[in-house]
Image (cartoon, rainbow, N blue to C red; front, top):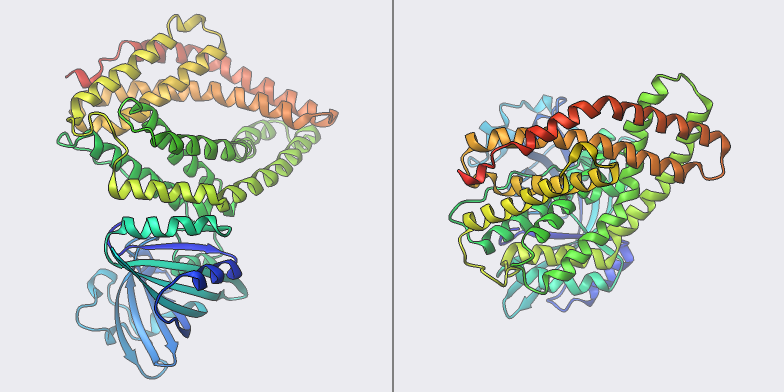
Amino acid sequence: MEAGAELRVTGDPAALTAIFQGLKGDRARSVKEVSTYYDTADGRIWRRGYALRVRQSAGGRVLALERQDGAAGPARAWTCRIVGPVVDIGLLPPGAPRSEIGAILPEELRPRFKSETKRTRKTLKLDEGAIEVALEIGHIAASARRAELAELQFRMSDGPTAVLLEHVKPLLGQRRVAVCARSEVARGMELADDRPPASLKAAKLALRASDTIDQAVRKIVAITTQQIVGNLAAAADGRDPEGVHQLRVALRRLKSAMTLFKDQLADHAGPLGESTRHALKGLGPARDLDVFLAETLPPVMDGSGDNADLMQLAKSAETRRREAYTSVRRLVRDPQFNRFLLDLMIVSEEGGLVARGRNAPLRPTAAALLAKRHKKVLKAGRNFAHLPNAQRHEVRIALKKLRYACDYFQALFPKKAARPYLKRLASLQEDLGRLNDATVAEHLVDELVADDAEAAIGGAMIKGWYWHRLQTVEPHMLEAWQDFAEAKPFWRT
């Protein structure tokens, strides 16, 4: 987050109203607003990172073009007052970025969705600055679809963002409210298109050789926090499995980094690591069932036709999946989890997670940490061809930790040296991933079939199919291990 960035909190309207009323600030001011958002038939305004709206209030009608700089941050806007029903981008002030969205005629524009809200504002004066708070209650409508809108928006208008985060954190323990990364515009566009919230993949991490260990840890926490928050809505929605998947990826990357730097981290990093592990545990069942239904089951069913035993197994998995996503939604709304998110945001702003060697140069430390991870993989995989699957699973975990470390540090070393090593690592990881798929499928099937004889037959078919596939992968896995074991570590160049 940057200075002036917004933090959005969503929840039950009554809970948000109670929090707002409890904040001591200047006199609250309310206004009712009706906003209609427009775009072309091919959606090119939104696709190019902008939103076009007409807002009607007691003060008249205002046309605005907003640049969506970030889902959780403030949007920059170019506005003008208009009279009459025609929506024309040409009426916007000279500084509006017309060239970025291209020429658009008034007749090309059509309404996408409408929001009707009551917005109440107040300003909190603090020793370190001022926070603008807005309570927004209303709804969004698109065609016949409708979604309630209830959120608190906090913006540090004067002072550092960390002060805002520290001020909001205690509020998350008062009521069951949650951090929200989606803007009103994003929600409206999703509603208009009848699609789930978008998931967010990890952004590329830009560590530099001149970074200190403290700067590196701060950057890693910042980029993983951004991915965590950016996937909360998609994970809770549940229609797109990628939401839970990317949320788990972000948390795993964070957990891996905290393990990687454990010798350098301060004691207060411990609770953050524990919260990370707790969240991962809560997301695991939903992800396993997503993979089972979308990837594990289909190839077996395709080869077996409309097999009643497999269909019964799928039905059991769907029931369990719904229960698992109830737990995901409970996690996303959990006050402790949301305070954990605020703690991560504070570290992203201020750093301070490193206690030992915080100003030490990064590259020598990175090389030592990579060498340590590499050595652990080789040790775990000694005599790989004769290892039982349980021990190969340990190799996979060690390899995944090494892969995350490489992702963090590879930019510090020559690309040409890193490429062959990373290619061999990825090949071995893919084969070991198939082993994990078979193992997870076996455990999950055992849980699903319980006392259901019909489903048990389908479960036996799943186990047989995947263990047979694993045997066909075995020669390539052995070759991939040998290639990796002989790979030249790029950090030694």
